[in-house]
Image 1 (tube, rainbow, N blue to C red):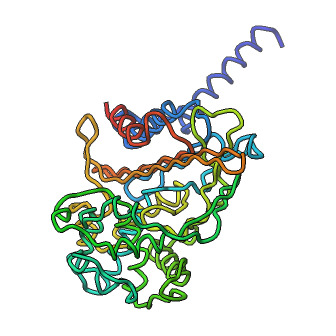
Image 2: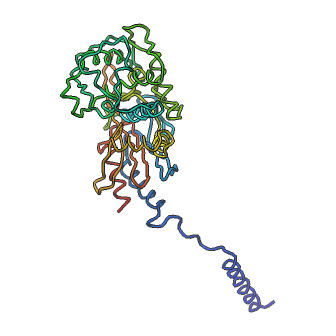
Length: 395
């Protein structure tokens, strides 16, 4: 066969191959996400988050939900550094101390109980306090709403005056320190009472949600079973509170005990250890819970899908700021949220430990939910990171 004939056959084969590819659908696929699509927005939002969080000194994790669906969960950095036996990588199941994000957890739990029992947020709390507690001025006037909006009248002055006795030790991983009874602090504050004029003024105070840990078990029908009237641990009440929170959130991974994540400060200091923040069951309520961003994201998603509270109660919670806040980004995008931050510096028996955590959940009006947690103190803070990422993605 001559060269000319071979060439003609080759050209014919190529032509047939091109025809088959064209005719039977071996076409180049169009991009799955185009400008204006929701998935394109999420890609941009995540790019902005990753850019803001790049070069962290410890670790972070976040989850993103949209329209009731988990879109992504990301973890980066370290849950433990070399000084504490690492490095260990952060993963999306690592539980970080959520600090005041715990307030939303306690708020939803007490609202679910009020909803199911046909009660109101404007009912008084007095009937759900331990009977052995003495009650100071104006305590009988405090309502659930006032605890949930920090308008109960409690002030740090009373907390400072209430000196509690030591109740064991706290294990912070790198060191152990004495622990003092938070239960007795709350008992003392109730005995101290509040000034009526202060009840009309919002004043952020952990004790408001700390009291919910004591109130929630009684509201659910359990008596306060502290060892005696001078109990420094109220173990039964603690355990009942934890059980009720887990059932309400339908999440049995949430705990007041961490799973080994260390918390650090930035920039790190030589020879300064991180901290694990200890078992905080005794003080939970306004803080004290450990969750992963994926777990917390599932909680907030379930809440806004009306799978925990009914629509009426969930809408009232948001509108009235019960355990959450309404705010807007610099560009005017409205969202509901609650943040949390915790920092601790300890020097005990010659060992220095410093640690911090930061986190926030946000739910925007377009249905996007984002939960960001960091086991260190980022200079911009979690709120600004999420707000700015959303605005830039929306440009």
